[in-house]
Image 1 (tube, rainbow, N blue to C red):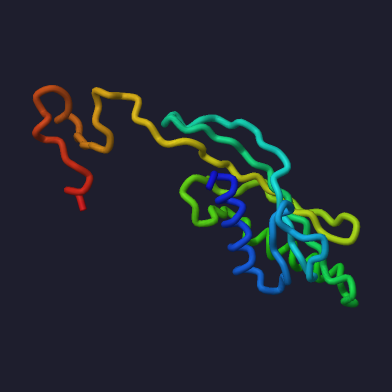
Image 2: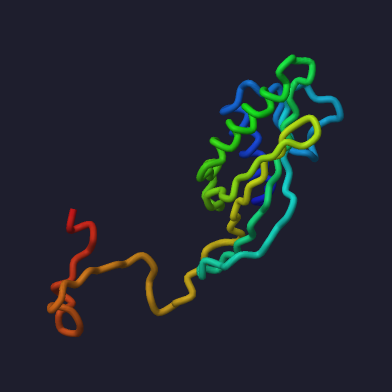
Length: 165
């Protein structure tokens, strides 16, 4: 499963679990024509390249949009939609969806349109596998030296961070 498919599935599952007042949560490409209300459908609107973390991976910022449709048969449908949009905005704060290849969501916005709410946010996604580009330096070995006991000839005075605990 690709990063985008995994993220979409995690997004649906997390929103479903956190917002039980929604009768249906799905992506736009899997949702049927007639959904039980209130419903939320989400999709990616845009992908933008972002600065790479210098570890061999690339970063794309996905702009997501969630369409929240309240139960229009309810007398306070607009208020219901407002409350659901606010709950989603709260859920989106620094959201990682339990995935190690995304960075925290950001730039969350919501607005009322037509008979429902639209909530948009950005989610940076890391693609590819980390690579160590310095073959002469082993990854993951850190030693600390305290001045003036640093530099050549003082290597034996260096400490590993775990020795400081």
